[in-house]
Image (cartoon, rainbow, N blue to C red; front, side):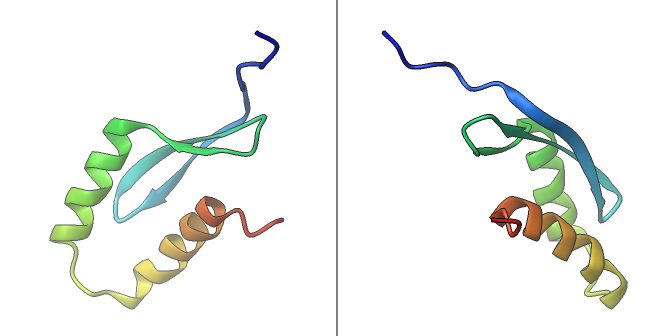
Length: 70
């Protein structure tokens, strides 16, 4: 098998709605969010008030997730 297993080329986190969302970008371009962070983020989204101050953090995370740098 000649397929290489992707490795993390970037690891970091985004602070959104009081939750640290731990993320990784793999060498093949995949964007990965750690499962525990994803669960905490979903809970925070459900509980968060509609506050415009949260928009910048949400936008930064969404842009990373969508790989807006391509």
